[in-house]
Image (cartoon, rainbow, N blue to C red; front, top):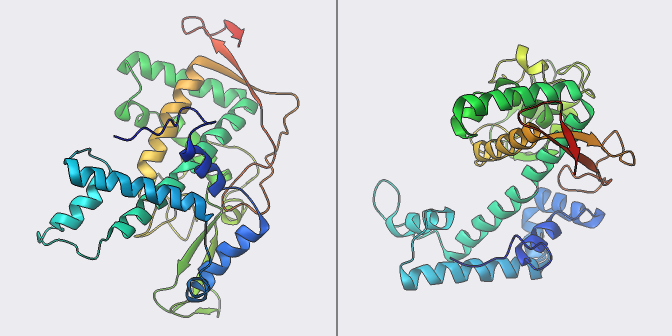
Length: 321
């Protein structure tokens, strides 16, 4: 494998690239929208979606990984290996996919890096922010997490997915604070919007306002409040268009990493809440303000949360750390 030193945020180039990819800015946002609306002109003008130095670093690194595996036969069951195997062996027909070049593999790996870098962190941060202000929800989640760990012995895929209140908390966090604010799509078939005379032609570029839909009282009463119990009355598979719930998009291009991302947040949140009381620092705002020109749901203000360790055997014993 390759050493990335990602645990050291000051030296890790990958961490720096990830942060830079989500830095807010008017021209960055304008460029992203221009690329979506006029892709041919964007490429004709040789414009760049990201800073060249960052993309070149990632491309060189991934290319080095590919070449290393070609030469040494080194195997690791990861995303790069899947794409290399697909190119060499093909799909079910056994024919190699010659169209899957190194450049395309690099682009896909870079997309995965960017897509999964800040979104999971944002969801977990917003969950801690909400629970730090809702002591009843935090205590209910703590009880559920501890009971589950005592019953199952650990937090794993089966145990966290059996925690119903944890699931509601995550769903409500993703409703109120969706990591992706807008979803770009292309209309593949002409259609009329129900109840209106508005017609969308095939090939039309669409921008679905996820945050606006999630905060619409027509679909979610008291949208500005953190109410995990609202998902106790809604089915696990919320139907569209009756309830537009789109934290991971929908359809055939739905986020491929959805289950992994949710599992990450569930395990981390259950572990933290089971061991700590959460308290919002007195200098922190009580309402999250989103960066105006960010590509994703990015907090404008710094949020400070105080963690107070809870004695596992005695739920009333606390010590500040």
